[in-house]
Image 1 (spheres, helix red, strand yellow):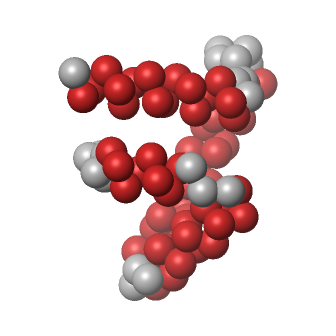
Image 2 (cartoon, helix red, strand yellow):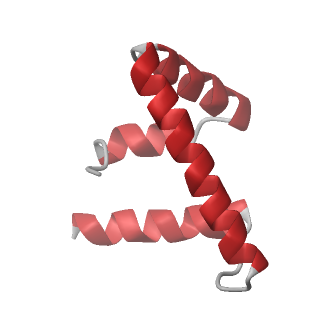
Length: 80
């Protein structure tokens, strides 16, 4: 999947949780119903896969602050 423009992405990620949720819902609502159902099914499958990895101890959970720091570092390295 191609990442959106870094500046747009970073701006959206900097929004407070509630505004990010509203933006995500608005974007999903703008898609045709069939695509929305496919996306929701894909997210359910992804959430189940990730939950399984956590339960089996294959991965460790990161708190939001650590995860966002890792994402920002990755995005910064892509700019160089």
